[in-house]
Amino acid sequence: MKLVLTVVGVFLVLSAALRTLASPADAPPERRIAITIDDLPAAANSISAASITAMTKQLLGTLHEQKIPVVGFVNERKLYFKWDEVNERIAALNMWLDSGFELGNHTYAHTSLNRAGLKEFEDSVIQGESVTRLLLAQHNMKLRYFRHPYLDTGRDLQTRREAEAFLVQRGYRIAPVTMDAWDWMFATVYEDAKKRGDAALQQEVVKSYLSYTTEVFAYFEKLSRDLLGYEPDQILLLHANQLEAEHIGDLLELIRKRGYRFVTLENALGDSAYGLPDTFVGEEGSGWLEHWAISLGKPPLHQPSAPQAMVDRANALPHPQP
Image 1 (cartoon, one colour):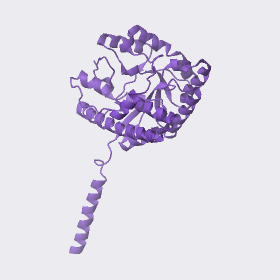
Image 2 (tube, rainbow, N blue to C red):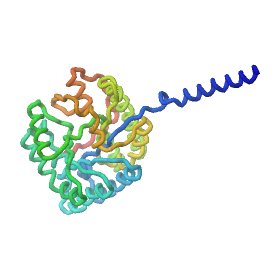
Image 3 (cartoon, rainbow, N blue to C red):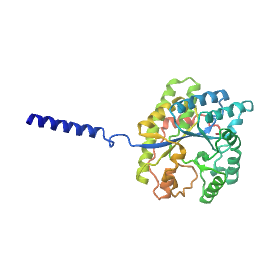
Image 4 (cartoon, helix red, strand yellow):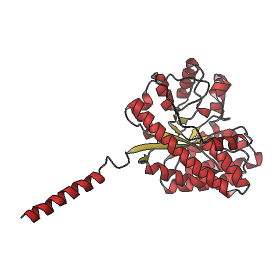
């Protein structure tokens, strides 16, 4: 009898231990994130329409295969970079809609509200609608999201509120950002290395980008908990570039391993955090977690810096207008 009790006791201890090991407390937390991609049809103006088409096909292929909902934000001026390529560049935009994704407005000329002023900004918003609205209508969709270039929402509160009222009047909801790992900067170095056939540097860039992304996610997850008491549905900012086209699968895997489920931008914006008071103004744009922190009088500290080696490489390269 003692032997039986001993065996039963051991079994119960082992069972409890196994349950502890498999408990939700040790599993990644359940998190949600929406993916947004700026500067369509391509962040780099200098690449050909054929290259844009190939890049778009590769990027959308991964996103479609993995069933990731995405909104892409368009700068329509990029459609007219070369007059003999206009139709092909518009066709690249249409690929997004044909693949089941959504398009939003990022102004015609990537116009900063902070630098241009309200009137020029409003004109750029309107000018940036024509082709995008038409393409969306052909897919029985409406243009409903706007993303501020550079995340510049206004240098003073009056200008910010007037811009917001203008956007609402035109039927837009502003697409905030809570996660941003500067993929555009890494992409500049990556694309230059690719042009020169420097495969080793390409691999170094990818490794550095993913490592920095991990730091950024960890920082903003903690900031969310400290500031709000929970982690809201996050919104990630990416850009239409060769780095993402070739390695977004690696990025999505990294995000999944942190416990995230991918949701639509519409669903993410249903989180109550996006209704918080927001009085942020500044010379430079910022993410919405910083907006809320500053509005609450709790400015965030110690945000991770991008790797200096990559920053130096990027700064040494030409910086064409977006």
